[in-house]
Image 1 (cartoon, rainbow, N blue to C red):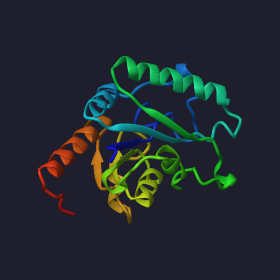
Image 2: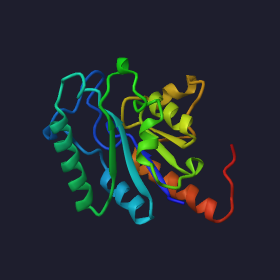
Image 3: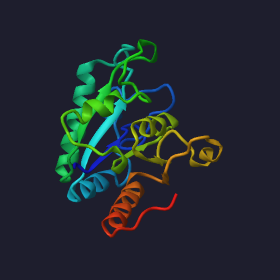
Length: 192
């Protein structure tokens, strides 16, 4: 069975550009603190890291598919320089297009794991928005909401379906994942 961590991109890996704004070129992409270290650590622990991100700016005509490919290629290169590994899956569709891959739908999860044996109950999805938490819940992942993106963690108190865990950023989320993995290996179940 594969050990998998799913990550949103904007607000988890790189700085969230702001509501209604997009990262349209590499010069606008900025890794958040400790992200490269977190991805390296998860890679070292044998996790497959799969980035799942809505990128509707493509179909809105704000940036081209080629620009998105360039950003992705450079992001992966920087991650690999630090001995991390990621796979990247995007949904380029607008909300009104009704695709099956736009989060909170689960199509990106299915695409990213096609042909793999996956126990989604043992996977994690780290995101920065209610949409990410909902998507993770729909597929059956353990969800971690980080405060490094668009959502103020204090908002979560008012949510009907909060995430399983809260973390300040991806590094803190990584510590949660590794601690839970250790508990599970030792036969200790998490209390709900």
